[in-house]
Length: 308
Image 1 (cartoon, helix red, strand yellow):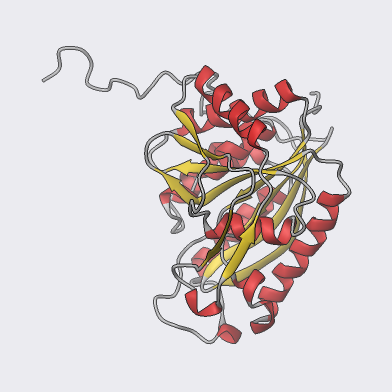
Image 2 (tube, rainbow, N blue to C red):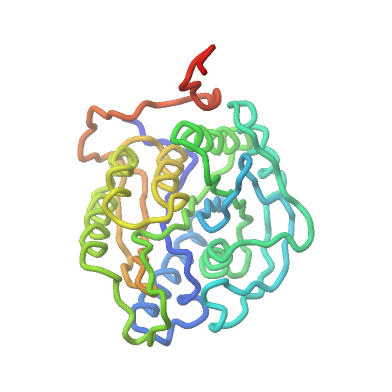
């Protein structure tokens, strides 16, 4: 199988602000920060034309939103961890690509629009990812929302539209997916030095997921994500959608080299920093149960015509 792609490599990273704002409060936070620093250097040396960020902490309700403001600037405070401080940001967005992506999504049957006005609230996950992975804005970015109600077909098509836009513009990308593993967090304040994964079951399943990533089994994860979601507590928007989109964007196969740079607790949730790089090797293709979709044609009419 050929692995030639517009994607240089992919990154899976957590949305929480501790590695950005307080890496010194916990050794695990510091380990995550070091992993971000490693990937920052790799991105700078990759020759990428753009960084695509799919963030589960930017939920959309109707359709798919794409940030197109050329230079969004504001100061953000995280809803849950406001006591850690403010996050001022100023990013460089590839507006031309954002509009190209929107049109590519529409051609595949999706409802999509760009947002480009001063003060639009960029989410914590995107801010953390871009502030640590691309702090000097050396490479323009594009941020994509995660629709709360999109099904697998819609999410797969959204990923394929990203590749359409990259091919049209002849650009090479680094894909960044911002999402937790387990997302069961403590409901009361804890001493950061005592942070841990909320439950042994969450930790066990997190490690199973990491085994798949390490083996480069991205499509296997995409196919099994519903089962995994049934075992550990993950918000719906942050459960299987990120892996569906990542697989559709990077390539729906298991031909990847996986590297786990860090896995740590973030207020009880599972935070991992992972790199997936397309390769010629594979752990083998399976006979998958989930179907593949090229164009989105709307939700299925379950009741049918004339139903009461």
